[in-house]
Every structure is written in structure tokens, then in C-alpha cells.
Length: 244
Length: 109
Image 1 (tube, rainbow over the protein chains, first blue to last red):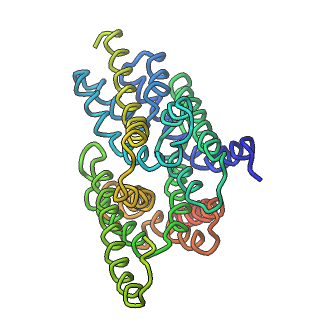
Image 2: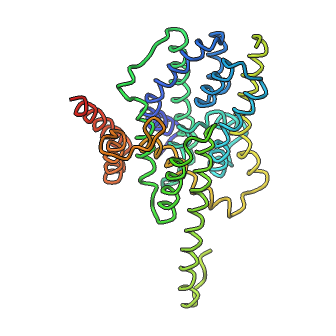
């Protein structure tokens, strides 16, 4: 039996490895932001106001380069566009929650929290407390992000890159995606998105990621339609009802 | 940029980011979810996760690196096999990191 407490704790735990892997990025962001001439208070505040790693890195670079505020905000918009997909994807799961929950969970909706949470929602077995898992995952990432950026800003702390801690992000995602490849459409979706992401990696503002995600979705849908089209022939021949 | 403008810029960055994260949640609740969109969204996790994983494994400093010398690719394949056999995320991470460190040591010799 899952309770809000048990879901919250599993969320914290599920997010732990990926959050630890994010620590080097937080430290680097902190050091870069100070090098870019940001006041320490602002560099720290950005981690809770924006709370989006890539956008913070790019924003800091643009500020250092003397870019116009409008350009920085527009770039942030493009870099974070992929979150539209995450938001739409969790929407049906949190539809019945109060407005306060939605506003809170949307704030915590990062790549890392989304990946771990959507896998929880996609696991069979209903629990009405799964938003507590989402919340736990979000809190874990938020806390380590704030702590590591603060350490970078105030201590100039660094992690030896030869430890390769950043690799835990890819590894966590591998651990999450493989069990989710249940049928041909999802395998085709994953493979095509991966190939496009590699081919389009050098596009600016993470647009390659967005392009890859949209390609993967389109390919998955196309395979599904082809498959269900083939399946539909049989029930109609047997005179059964289409389950749809 | 002066300090007040800097703060204003960061707050605007935050507002834009938050709007992107909250917008679809609120809009889809009001408009209802068309069934094509609902089906499309089931492919967001495999597509997005793979789109983040593949460049981490297949690219090294932005260039394609498909060879046994690419330690991250080999470690990633080990992790994928462990994920497939065990369906356990923690074991996957442990196996992948162990493989990566081992390969780094072997290559250093």
C-alpha cells in the first residue's frame, strides 16, 4: 500500500543517483557565473528562479558576452522548449490535483525529474499518491542543484572531471528507457530520436534535442498506425468489434 | 548591464521557463486532450531519453566516435545489457560506472 510518505521517499531515492551526477554541473555553473561577473547573490538566485541547467549556462555566457536582455530571454525560451513536451506528457496524470499542486510540480519539471517521474506513472498499478513521488524527485534534484551551485559560487569548488560523474545522467536514462521499450513503435521511436540527436547535435540552443524528440514521436506514431492498421484487418474478418 | 537590469533579465528568464513548464498542464486541462495528442505523448519518454543518451555515447567532443576506444560507448552498452536483464536502474548505474572506470584504467596503461 503506498502512502504519500512512501511515495515521497521513493521519489527522493529514485532521483538520488541522477542528482549526484548533476553536482559537477552545479559546481561548474557556479564558477562560470562568478567568472562572467555576475553578483554572487544573483548567480545563486538564478538557480531557484530559473532552475534549468542548460538555460543557466547559456544565459551566463550571454550575460558575460554583453548580450541584450531580450536576446537572453528569447534564447532561454528556445533552449527550454522541450519542457513543453514534458508538461503535456505529465498533464493527464496530474489533471485531478489542486491548482496549488500543479503550480508546484510545474516548477519542479526538469529533464531529470521528468524522466524518473514519467517512468513511475507508466508503471502498472494505480496509486493515488504518485504526485508525491514526483514531488520527492523534484525536491531531491532542487536541493542538490542549489547546494552544488552555491558551492561553486562561494567556494569555487570543483570535481575532478576524470571521475566522470556526469555520466550518471546517461546511465540513469539508459536504466529508465530500456524497460520502456515494450513494442516495435517505442523501439523505432527511441532509435530514430537517438540517430537524429547525434546527427543534429551541433545545432544551436539544444534545437537538435527538440528536433530528435519530435522525430521520435512522429516515427512512433507512424509505426503504431501501421501496426494497428494491420491488426484491424483480423478482427473485422472475424466479425469482432474493434477494441477502440 | 547594470545590476537592476541583470536581476530583471534573470526574473524574465525564470518567468519564460515557468510558463513553458506550466502552460501545457493548464491548457490541456481546459481544452481536453485530443486522442492523437494523447497517443503522441506516449512516445515522449523513449524519444527524449534516447535523444539525450545517444550523443553522450556516440559523440566525443562533438565528433562521431564509434570505436572500442570510446569508453563511454562501451560502458553504455554494458549498462544497456544490465538494464535489459535486470530492469534495475541502480544496478544499471553501478555497472555502467564500474565499466567506465575500469576501461579508463585499462586505457591509461
